[in-house]
Image 1: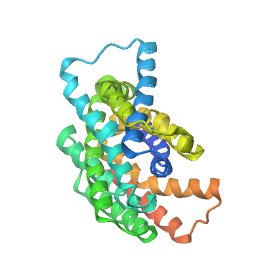
Image 2: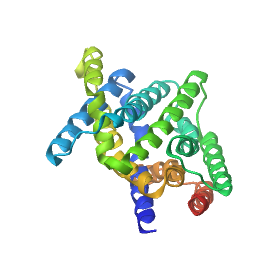
Image 3: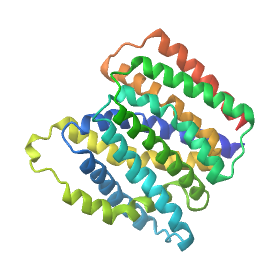
Image 4: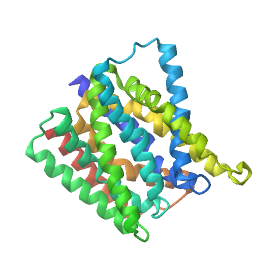
Length: 286
């Protein structure tokens, strides 16, 4: 029970960190190309991860761990960042939240397929209602749709859910920060070469907001958030803790209200309470 509570607490911290990822990416792709942004954020995070692994004196993963680490790298180091960066050239950050509301269901599905979890039937009811609430609210707030952007976001959700589930499975043996660190190091040669090939031709035209967005997604979205997230999934269960991501859009809106002074509509408060109830129900039956 204590491990479960620690898992949910750690997962919640991860979700709060991730809540700034899409807005930061949206700002960064204004001046950086999606491919360079994806490779640069992975490169920066991989250098930090290598320092962490070297300082901690951790042993290398076994050969049997390498296929799973490749899946994690493809899902959360390459796939999700690149696909969302490409999508955010066609849709707004608000519209992308529609699909983030489906990520907990994708994570739970891969948790069943890859992690061997078996949530109770009531879990899927609460998870589905929560996803519907988030998607409905986000759709009402979203801008114009784009078929290309929507398809890219669907693909991003699927590869991310797989990367979450596979990383959580590995975290039970290796530890949360070691999994994301080794996945980043594994992808370092490819992402470093890609960053070199797509480097911007003119640095002077890149504004401070884009640099800030790159810094956030490199340090927090790509490394620090995953330390807490994978630990939470491993301790509290992939399917159950994964439902915490239903709260991510509302954390983002709350941060916007606190930092930017944007108004918070009563509908947001009501739906947030409904989502919290769904998360609590999912936790009960996970």
